[in-house]
Amino acid sequence: MAKKSRRARRRAGTTAQPVRISRPSQTLSTPAASKEVNFAEEYHYVLADLKRIGITALVLLVLLIALAYLIA
Image (cartoon, rainbow, N blue to C red; front, side, top):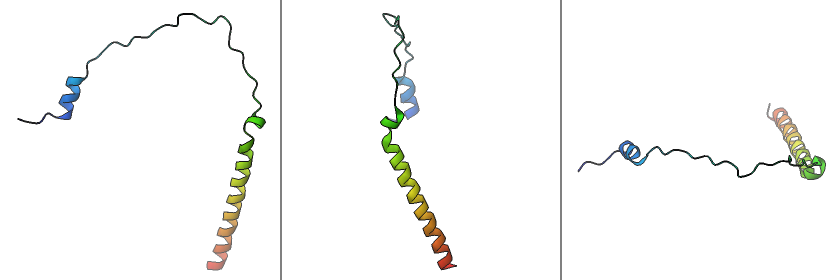
């Protein structure tokens, strides 16, 4: 008996079914209150990480320049 191809199995296995979208049972009468966010307080660690990345980049750049003078 011949082996069925994947394409034939896919076609046989898939049947188009209608998609049902449910509606919310009740609507919100008042908009949600927006919350004030202090980004300096929430993301204080980002500034420290950026400083560390900048220092590392500066050290590597100085190292590359020093190696360029030593090798050339």
